[in-house]
Length: 324
Image (cartoon, rainbow, N blue to C red):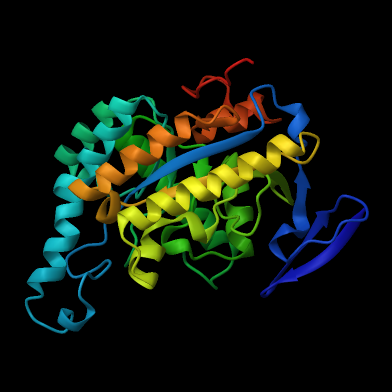
């Protein structure tokens, strides 16, 4: 069936599965049945956000010191994450042999070339997901119409390709700030999948006038930065949250194998998991999840390949799904 929904100032015609009602963003989904996958009952993919904000921009460790000039404490917090945290996180995934997807600000490789090259060497096959220009002063041009967002997405993809040799097939909006035009801008630029879907457990397909996008759920609850800054969670708290979240979804999937495909993205930031104690908590999390027989730890493009979008990723380095 077709239904017309408004999203802010924009409207999109969306195809709905008959008899189902979803929250606003999910109205456009076509859920993908779990039984169509050949690799188990539940998928977990992990994304590291490799971001640049610029001097004086980014998360604060001490809000009470942000008014100082110079603000040495918060600058040190941010710079440590870049200089040490990103590389350390890459080593954890390399040593644990777990796939990692990379959400990359387009300005990062040129501005932090040494850090980028060392990190990329540790996870050379990790799919790169476009994450806008930066996370502070160059966000999506919201409210300026579709054409400006289309141009922004194209420039982001062009710059990432220029500096990494890879043209991303995936998108996640910088600073988690987007609107309905963003989906259309992504589809018109050849983006195949997006993480701008935050209120679901299910892999799904969005139909836009410019084409289809695969929507990979990225719930706010499993993102370390929000929990760390907003709720004072420490890495050890995130370790318990991640393992409990995944274990319960895995149990549900095992008990209900005919339901729609279940997937979760775990969002990582080097400010949290790039410290020594953060890396230790991350390592314990990966080791615990690897023991789950019904969990597939994978990357973004492997999920897309395993669903109905394989042909659009032809020629990529995406991992293939393991066979039972």
